[in-house]
Length: 78
Image (cartoon, rainbow, N blue to C red; front, side):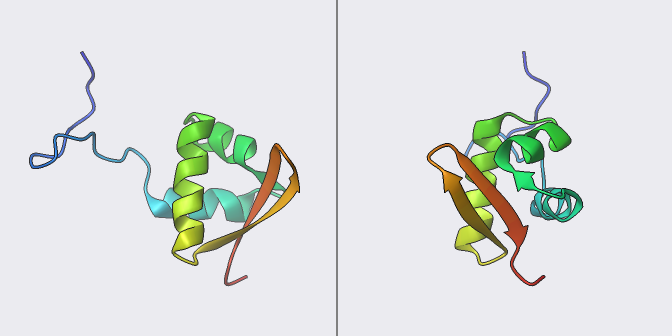
């Protein structure tokens, strides 16, 4: 049984990582790849990619594709 908490209304798991966790990880990485962010936060790559993409949609971060499987992230206001 998981020890993660669920939202009472939606029954979805609550986010374990905050947007600030992701923004700080991007700031701290010299080259902030999705893999690097996932490793730094201890989450899986798909979680990191999904959250970073949401932050990009919200204009918090920007990304650049280096190849079909490589993307780097940086904070939009810096």
